[in-house]
Length: 295
Image 1 (cartoon, rainbow, N blue to C red):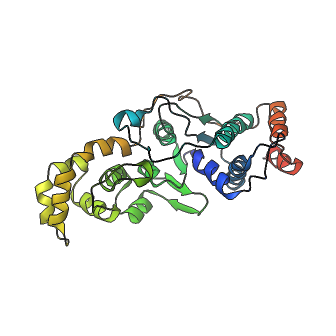
Image 2: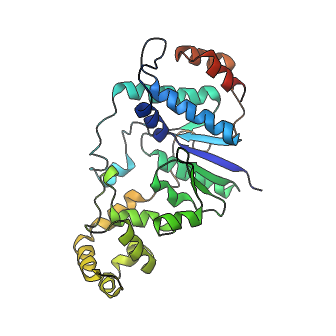
């Protein structure tokens, strides 16, 4: 049986902690650490359940040289900036990973999705099965191996290659095309008006990908669904969106970032003194500290 690598879309679990737990949880200086608490509790539960031998955490960092904003300056422009107290907690979460000896990655150019995509591609080539721990549908496009999985940890929802197709109506290889057609309001990517995921999956079950659709626009109206002529007109009118959208929705699998070729074998806490210094700073209870030391 192949070794399994767990690749964590960390920012989702940091944000979840930020929203779910009371900001009365603080470090020794009185600064909120509710997001850190939520993230570290999630990681502890994952370790308890799976005892991962190979694990890495990918973080969305402040991007001064964004790959996607070079393509589309309005990308994610609808999102307010993160408050400073949350930015501090992100730094704590990355520091926590280092203190635990868990490989962690961030980039000022690429997103956590691209980091995960790059690690997954390299590790799959090295013979690993991949589990991507996230709630983000975009990452289902990386479930390419026979034993790969997309795991929504909080909901306990696990999708393999066939599960992705059953849930979204397209194979993982076509998820980026589906998102390019339908758009993504969360990321401020405008799609073809009138085309949601269901309609996008209809089109992609007929045509191979976005390029194939663009080369066969005149054939959309021949498809056997109500309103096919209207969809053809809409695709024809807005076809200029699609090449850019596909570049935005397709996860990069050959990104270069700090320590991108680092091995992700977890070998335990590298330095207990550093571990205790951080836990002192975070005002962590003896009980929670003991749990981590016993993993």
